[in-house]
View 1 (cartoon, rainbow, N blue to C red):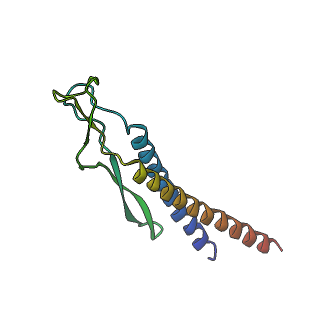
View 2 (cartoon, one colour; view 1 turned 120 degrees about the vertical axis):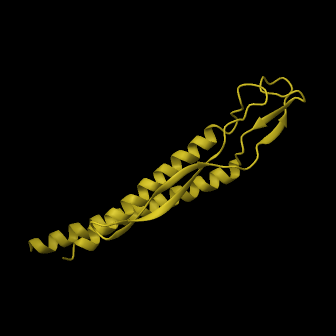
View 3 (cartoon, helix red, strand yellow; view 1 turned 180 degrees about the horizontal axis):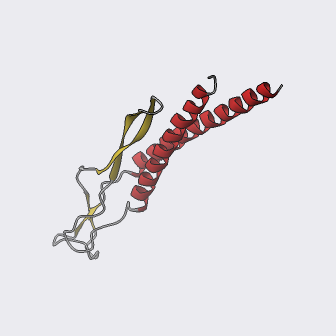
Length: 139
């Protein structure tokens, strides 16, 4: 069965695309909340979310697929900014800001995008090879 490896590559690339799509969603959420402070003085602001992946064996097909293991919360300390007029400011006028580094988030987004595109190329190539195999079988 020459087609099984091609179908397998489609499944593996599909799991990679799904995982990277989730990663892009988490990064987008972090970027969107980069300035979200706590509602009241001393309240914690938005905490950066993290994502971890794991390899999972699909017993039915024998393929190692990637999947999201967990979406967690980054435990690095929050930044303090002096903004005395902010409703979330403490007695010293300091406001806890999210523990988000925009440069890191942009790099993470670029890496997830490139990984997604690489998996998409695998899908395109596998589809093309399947179509060529079917065409050869017709003749």
